[in-house]
Length: 193
Image (cartoon, rainbow, N blue to C red):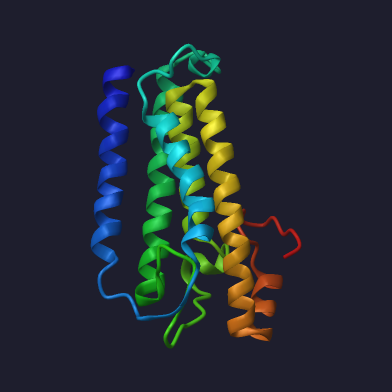
């Protein structure tokens, strides 16, 4: 498992990162951007979550203990889950087009995208990332994977709430109607905005 994990999962994530980097060119100009302090509140926990999943071993920590026994079927299920999550983010990124930004922003001539994956969940990139992280954590099979997913969820939830506030300010009633119709992260699971 370790040799396959060491190459297959980095290959999936690096391919995704390469696409993400290339797709970032040509984005619309920014009218409003979150502060650096605000951004660090979600970037740093995401970096910590990534480190927990990437490190070969954490020094003297119970987080290295197995959460469940390794089995080939669970590894391949985790691979499928990770790939599905990453592909879902790519689909969402394509639909966002020039409106995408890595930070919370309002773009010049910002458009409210409500079709494609945005008709399933309001934040499909975050949904896909969480699914991919869950798959990666499953493949790792250790307690630190659970901690990584929880950290990532908290970071993305914080960012999501800020985005929702800004989108409501920008699109008003149109965004409110969209929020009532489409759940934030989990398809078919509506929780108050």
